[in-house]
Image 1 (cartoon, rainbow, N blue to C red):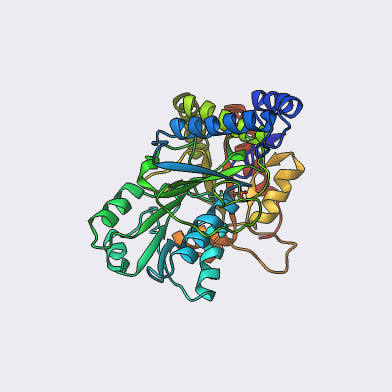
Image 2: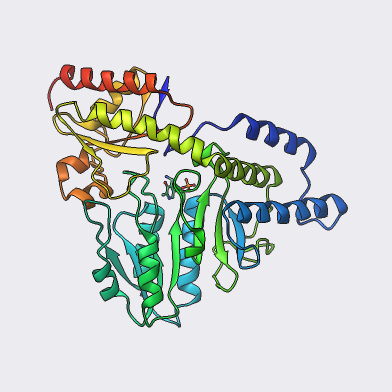
Length: 380
Ligand code: PMP
């Protein structure tokens, strides 16, 4: 098997699996229990949070970690929770048109609740027009939410510039949130730019079912889940010591190994880009000012991408696509559409995404197979 869908999900790190099994045997108490077993676990969890904040190089006396089930829940808690709690301060919100659905659909919901949302365009080179951003930032804007690494095409937004515009504006109450689900361990970012940010475990070889919203302590949110009051009353429910420990472990490991992994992945990316650009009938989306090498997107112009992806799957080569020929409703990539304004490219996009477990030989086989399929598959 050749697995090139690592932005979708990754294989779990062996050390993480061992730790998870050990913790499930040894640390199965309820961390909220007031007996000694639970209290010891609670003490450890406070330390795991501090380890995460230290690994991300942000000040543990300024930020809190709220564990969630993953990035979707973290984005929901950040955006819905902030808007609902602070609606008396203003009703205007800003995001971009290329966000993940767990951000875009939350903003759609807030429009139903009476908020006004500005959806920023992102240019084909993966940049936001700063003058336009400046012009839409209003006195009643309370929240800006912009992702860093885009999950479909790998373009990296320059959020330092955005923060700079926010800092220079007269509006001192704007809160800045970022979805960093595809960033941590894969692209450098200064996390202290943000008042809140979203992270997830299984994109970096951690276990599914755990993520976090990290937020400045001064920010108040309305909870989405009510119950026993865990996680500062913002996310009730029994904490999973094994999942939390595994998450803290993998974040630290991936940040420690960042340079080694990045250099290796960049060599795979450069090779893939060079070879893919030689194939006729595809368009590689590589025109970004900054491109995270873990993700590469291309459009098959002469064949339907869903058919190509299925044919690749039949040869046990796994990549990802948005469109499905069996679906009555054709789903196009809203990201590729926003960047290219080209419906054909958007409805025939294929994402390949790398991990440290891939190698050049696999990329070579993928490129050769893709080339072969494009010439042998009949029809469009
Ligand atoms: N945001 C981004 C940028 C993502 O790539 C994903 C996962 N595809 C999510 C949010 C949702 O993550 P989760 O599956 O952890 O809820």
